[in-house]
Length: 250
Length: 321
Image 1 (tube, chains in turn blue, yellow):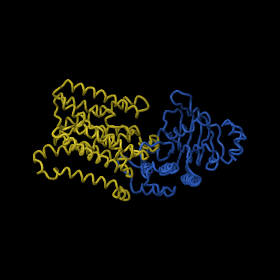
Image 2: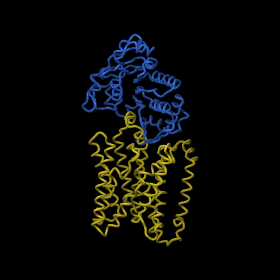
Image 3: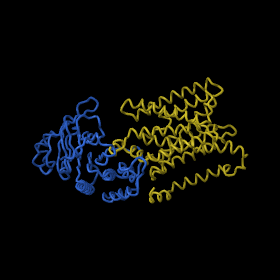
Image 4: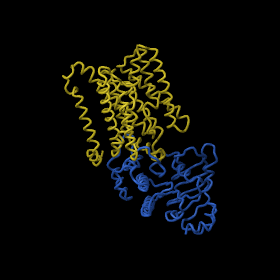
């Protein structure tokens, strides 16, 4: 049985043209990359699955249960969403940001325990950002910020992880470490990762499947290893020449 | 608080500066420790309630500003801008006109009711459209303008109360006694007890709205709760001392500038203490600068505070406030 199932999904922002139209999809264990031209509805789809957008029509099921039926805190324990496009009005300590990931494990009257600190410290060691814990978020580099935000969602400890365009600011070394950590995490949890990535070279390295999305519909889903055989499809989706795709990818 | 956090807290340089400031202040307030310097009766009937009033009022108003800035994710948010203080001022004026004692529990209760109602009203107007946060600042601002027009109107027409209205609209600590201080202390205590549990949610919401939703937080509910709590805080402060300018907006910025390396809870309390110290200084000036004429300390706090703030803005072009 697939982990995420989507049926007849429709959504539009404020009476404009449909961003998601009649989308059907299912996502299994492992890592799936969502790719497609700008404005094709990738981020919107992630936001619907993670319940940030609620005014959609259709059914989204996770573990066989409609996501509208989950309690908010319960839902946070099975799914986390990493959006790297955030702007902070005020400064925060990195440790405070990481601890936020544990918030769904607390009830209203309790505070972060020593176990929570230990948990965060452990994961910070794994992602190698231990030395940043006591720094201020405004004072670290954009690559480090990205690492912190990804670590935050690892702290959330959920089997499903959605990411919107990660790895943009990372150098090669950090990219590789993080890809590995991410892969291991999904494998260990036997979970499901959905990532929006534009760079198909990275997509090919990290994922098991690639789903192409265009005009609010999932057009095609292929194995990542078979990317080479699908150059015609890619050229068609992005509206470019086949040669260009080949030059770019290989 | 974990052990490392406490260690970082005690080793801080700026904290020592704070200590020196406190020491300096206790020197200028020797009359508190040595009551024989002024007449005993004057001390117990005039001075002590005044100091206690400054402590409670300063802590409340700056905390309200602090919470509002974080929860609206807006550095310009201020207790006087979301309509609360406007509501409380209406209640203060009404109780003056209908001769309700400003030392009674009912007075404090009525003020809080009006304050919360005004915030609720501004929030409801704002919720009509999707952009609640920017709208609540606008609708609160509108409510405040209406109230200020009424105050000016009353100053002109009700001559016998005009000095009172003028003082209270700039902030003054001259209208205090032990009863109202005791009641407002009780209010503040209850509110602080509640805030403790909200800290973790406030951090998360001010971090990012959407992230908070995926962390399982009911953002609108928590935000509404914080609005209500901060309007209680504002009501306490305005009931005691009227509208003290500057403190709710600027003190949180100044605290964040000096103590940015601390965690949220500690900054929250430091913010309150800084406001108290600042108001105590403003109070000394307002009493002795043009002796024997006494000015509303709100005027001094606005002038000094704004100048100091401008200095910080110039100095911190790189470091964000």
